[in-house]
Image: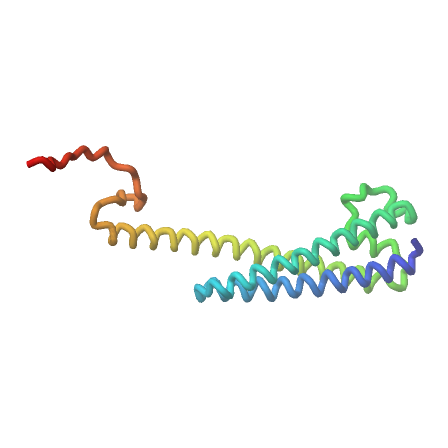
Length: 172
């Protein structure tokens, strides 16, 4: 591993990470719109696209780990750290002075983009929970209104009642 090879591989990795997280941000936005419009098919399509993007991000994370492993033994600035704690910025710090500012800036952009996507996902999680709770409440209300036989309790659940004992005299 040379400084030039590290710079080339790191730049490629940063570009691909940026592209994938940009795609994820777009997909999460579309997913949020689908949820707000109660578009089940659209939300499902968005979830599938997000899963594909997450798979691509996992592959890029594997490439990052491989790059860290190859660089730890070669560069003294990385050798002092545990491999699990080495960041993209740390890798950028090991390249030549001429390429370092550009790669550090790119790593900072990717970090900010990842943070923005994580925040969007946290908001989506809350919105999804809220929507599910709302739908559950609606279904309980519908169930209570449609249950003329009284099979639903006040909480909106079907609960087993007492045993019904009856007989029919068929001889008389």
